[in-house]
Length: 155
Length: 182
Image (cartoon, rainbow over all chains, first blue to last red; front, side, top):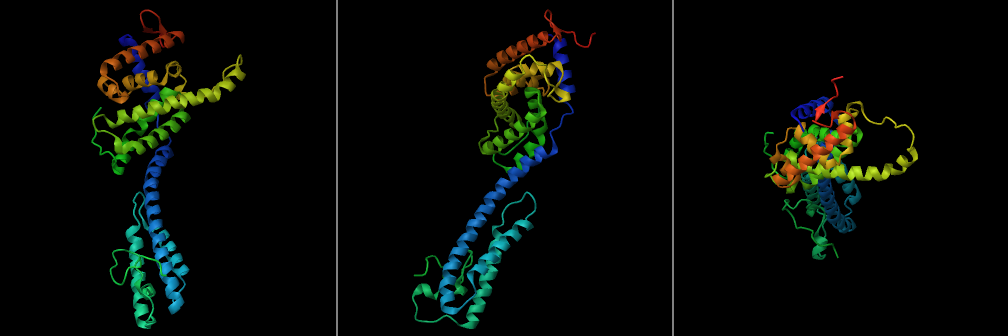
């Protein structure tokens, strides 16, 4: 291949491809796919965490409601779901991680329930250890150390 | 090409790599496939595959060369799929005038000749003569020794030259561009 041809080749390629740009949404879809993947993982983790919270609170509330007439756990589950959505919306674009946002809400809720419960003094004595787990003992976040941890379902 | 520092597996660095190399890989694919829409699809596929493998990227080879290697695999698979898909249509069109289906920027004889080459050869030509890759960088991009690369590049040049001769762009001896001299 002569220099003449090589020069022509470079010129033609430059002319044909030089100003060529991919459609703007083409790159956007990659970066959002990339961000979305991270977000999906985080949301999945948050959903699992929320499910774990719901299971533990559901179990505790089932026992607690039967004994004390405390609020419907479904309402609490609804609140958690709504708050997960709010946390996702508050997250700046391209950033992941709603765990702390969700757990702070759960902690606040746990504390308010605990306070409410200790004021009402509705926990009745004489039941098995699992029955002592009233709403005040709900600990959605492992960081919350007050009260017993409801790790096993109430018998 | 200036080597840029990227951290394998870092999302921020991958985004930077996207910004730096997306258009360049896209252009390589346009020239290799001769079709802008196909290049759009393939460049997305390339970066999606690259993102999956980003944690395993070794900084020994330039990141963009690595991307081009993935792009070549994507383009080859695309060409193969496309060939199978369009074969029945080609058979139906036998003897009829060819439809204009390509974008204006890829209608020239050079791009026609590149389209007729295997994607690996077309890509070598584009990486060398458009992106200015050295033999070492090309060898890294394709994961082959430099000597192998040298001979592959020679074969690609010869194949391109013969396609250009067939299209009447160059005379057969010596290789001279006749296009534009009329």
